[in-house]
Length: 420
Image (cartoon, rainbow, N blue to C red; front, top):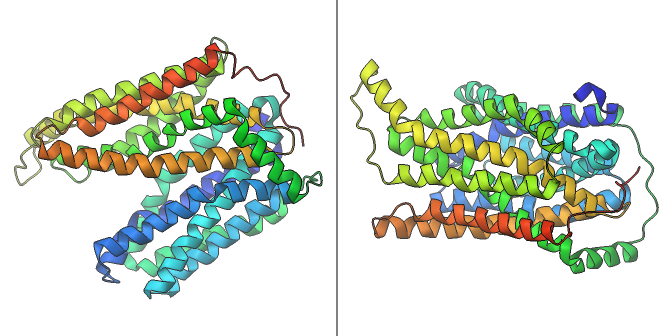
């Protein structure tokens, strides 16, 4: 399917894989490095990592509007170059101020190239946006799975090697895109006109309601890095269980996403497909909630057939939750991106995607805080299922909101897809 898309989209798909690969070569090992080698406190480590997320999610509107003002191509290239510098700083700097600056630059770089790349794909793919976004998700998933494999080898030598290789990957991506990514002319759009367009987007009730409702998707996606691996490790008593969560999720995405999108496109309206995806996501938290009530598996001190069988049985609810969450997000996320792009007038795709991503970042920050607080309360009250139940209810609420918008015709967009 990728070969049937335009060369520019194919370049961006490879770019998506490279960005995810280079990012995950380093990021999974950064917290351990800051704690064990730089000797920072847990609070300082959390603050440095949190700054990256805040900069990336909070500044995506800046990246989106920059793509509309100057074109997506230079913003994508600038973002990759900036991330090369940021990861290079991790290899050279061990002072707190430098590490904070590097973490913020990593986030700012993502805020630049992420909405710009999505806007470029939305414009370039035209009426095949949905296929392109599904393939982009697959490319990102494969990069996120394979990056840590290289990182685990490099970090065993020296973390500076890890950071240096990651910086080198982004340097290659930057140079390659300067030659491979086609230039697209941009209609002149003054800053006053862009500011007016942002206000119109904020005042577009249908778009804003849809952006708020689907912002929950990013919060729920983050559970692949929070709730699921933590629960898998706890209930099985095996540290490797967290890796099984990522493996199952990746295999499901690679094996089913494109087939599901093709099947659903012939049968369901986009809003209805998102609703069904959110329903699957909500159901995924049922086995996860049940798993939290179970006692952890006792370690026998060695690997045997009996202990392996016990680990497998204990992991079943978490793996079922992983399967359902992956299927639901693989359906809902490409459709949500497609509709956000459809809301955007010609020339403002980046702004609309950036605004929707910023809303998703705010929702994730608040939602993760609330989920953590609910988890603490659940353990105090001996009801550990409260946090996954809350996340499941959020998915249900989002599904209801999208269903209402679909029923009222707010998602039936008459305007054509943006053209280059």
